[in-house]
Image (cartoon, rainbow, N blue to C red; front, side):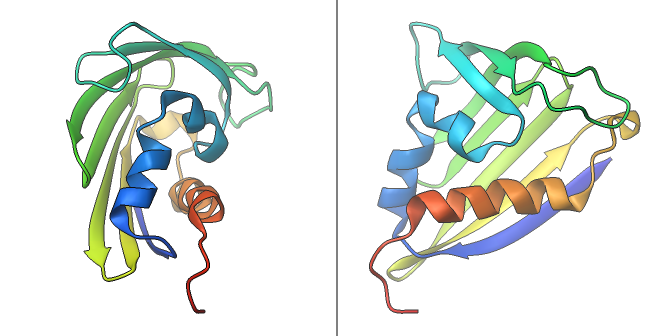
Length: 138
């Protein structure tokens, strides 16, 4: 199953990149993650981060899911892709310059039985939006 969402963020791409390129900030914008421990490579292709789920029940999934995140791609300041091994989800986040703002597009792919729906991608981008707000004019 594949879901996608797009959202305009009220910050330039470099500011958004600062948020997503800090491994410990992932739990702030990715739903279902309570904690993580990046390996020594940090935010680089091939890095592996240990994850701890937030314990909230999910349809057809174990509560308090743990697993590993494998960083698949990092292209500053426009592309971050990763694989969540526990949920077997692959995420692809792309950032596009929109002047003083950024258009973020998130595509998430995973097995159909985990209940992946579009609101999941929307929720991730909404949380990223909240982290990246600036004093931009509304």
